[in-house]
Length: 449
Image (tube, rainbow, N blue to C red; front, side, top):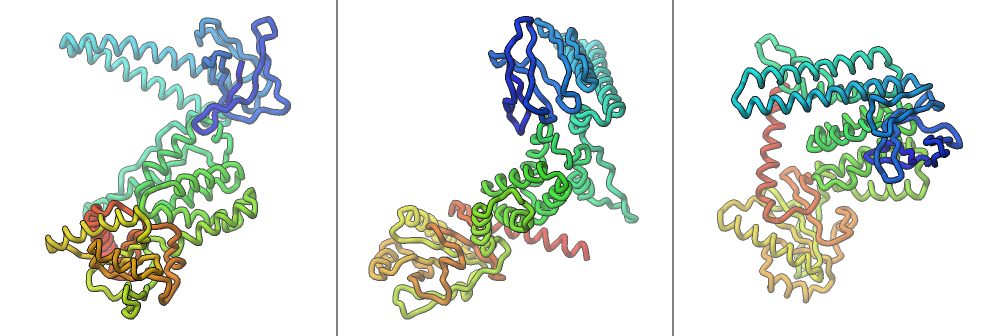
């Protein structure tokens, strides 16, 4: 027989036991078992029972061979006795819902609306009865870990938005309230939640659905609020820091690198993560130093580099169109050539339509100017072509060009608005969406005034 504990979205083996010959299995750990939701699993990997281990570590659970939960009993654990009562009540409710759901469908198929409505009402009553049962369980036993688990499943109640004197309402009130109070039914200072099945799904929903595509400042705000709530529990805090670091480091969403920088600077690099050794801390520091100079919203560094003549120098700032693409490539790189041709196709198409609103400042990593000239001529790249290893700055360092190709879009204010490669045919759409977002920001800013 296997004893497993819930952790994240998995079951983690904690112990095993063999029958004593009397159909009994005794689990005796070397020390106290970690508090959390446990499961009893047979040698054939069949789930037999879910239960809680917390304060009561010495108790007996009696199971029925046919798996009928109504014949189960527990001795020595008031919390598991309460959980068993919940399981029995749930089994009864599920049986009724299935039976009445079948009858309702039968009457619906016969177009007997009144009868179908009768069984629908009975199903609603069962649902309401279960809600009251769970509410009573939570109120009567607030310190039980199982009660805290049930409370964590409950959705928060969102109040109506306030009405202003002119009759209008704050359209963002309910969303802000939801984000702020999302964790009200959890105790984020209680590391036992790491071993309950409700925490990680709720965590995923919060960051991957509710906040995932919000502005960086919004994500950072609510991330900081949550981290502050866990700070007094070292295990909860560590888990959350590592979870967030993994999610935002692996994210392909534009702008999420800024979330990672904010997270690291305010946690790992602020000396709060005492479990991290010096070598790993140095790697984090190097990673952040590579990301921070080229974050979206950062003012771009002016480049002044020579063209193929080695006598004419061009600035990345002095370009006529509204936007500019900084395109770092190596002529010896097949991917660079393929992507350069794709970029040229977009430019040619937009030029033909009279809609080209960006210049290209293409920087080639080469010191073979003869081959470079031929490369440009053979491919018909008529944009600003500069490169080599001389210039006003070390462009490989200021733009952190460690691999080829690399791609940035700069706006009129010389700020970076895109710092990762996208399919070249998506550039026009990206700029359209960018201008929509900027227009909305300006509208909201004026509204606040």
